Length: 413
Image 1 (cartoon, rainbow, N blue to C red):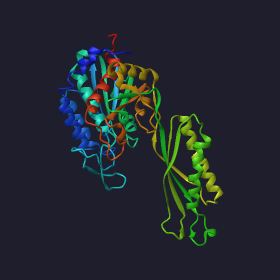
Image 2 (tube, one colour):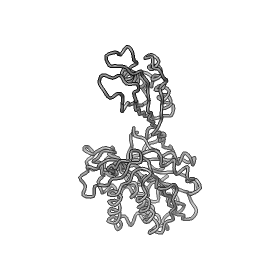
Image 3 (cartoon, one colour):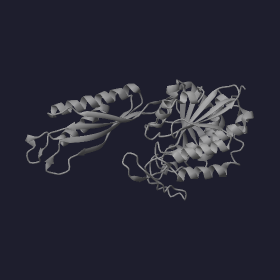
Image 4 (cartoon, rainbow, N blue to C red):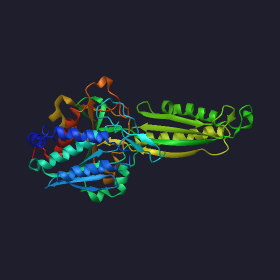
């Protein structure tokens, strides 16, 4: 589905005149980041900007918002922008770098906070697209919905909006769109991919049990440190011997905690394990294999108690709908030319698909290149991650508008 280029140019005709204001607003969000489910000031400012533009907005969950522009008969297009930040101390060197701190809800400690994943770009892009569509309603028809979603970083925000009944707050979309600023694409480029584009993931805390003893008398105990070491090595065979070579999967043991003194065999050990996979079937196999291998090792070591498994940070697969992605790719190719390309599947994970899956609507998710110096660009979540101001901010608005225009302003209108 191609776009009505004249209509798109009309919708984006204020891009230059609004640039300075959009850059200042972006810097505000960048300097005032907030942790997941604590985005109260961020949500307030988004709401203020939308109301000042005459756009209907309502809260869905404490810090989630939806904005709706009804513009006659036609398709309904929704787009997500995530709004939370990370407990990271910024080291970008920007003159507008974040120096913010916030209390961590889990630890109660004051921690540095930064938009080290680019969600401030996503906020600014979606706000800019909403304002552009609202200002030029003569150029398109249908309904455009902006979903400002909290807590992507903890996989809690999309679920919170579903539980707050987003299905009743917005008309059912014909398509659900999303984008993410990345260092893996050239600056100012957009990239799409049909099928699995972001991995399914889960983390699990495994507690294993031993029998305490003096370090000089290991025969009187069951050593959970040795047991944990065996489990780490055994888990390495899951990928090399249980997952087909054509599949991609990761099992990482990111933390082992046990004991406090060199000559004391402790009674427990804790392992934190993270997984990634590009299919539900492989992810399910990883879970089964972890439980099977851990349990087997514990039995072999004479562990006095069954291991415990506590799952958390569960992210669904992001599997781009073929038709929706094809429409967006065709629109991008037409508008951006050589700056539109392929996005290689990214091993990171997202909660983006939770809302469209709950609504049973197709979705597609693309990447936005944020750095001119791609070779030396920091990765997402790095302390130095702060995308180039331009062309990133303009391109984020353009991509949001062009993608939606494949439905709201098609060439055959």
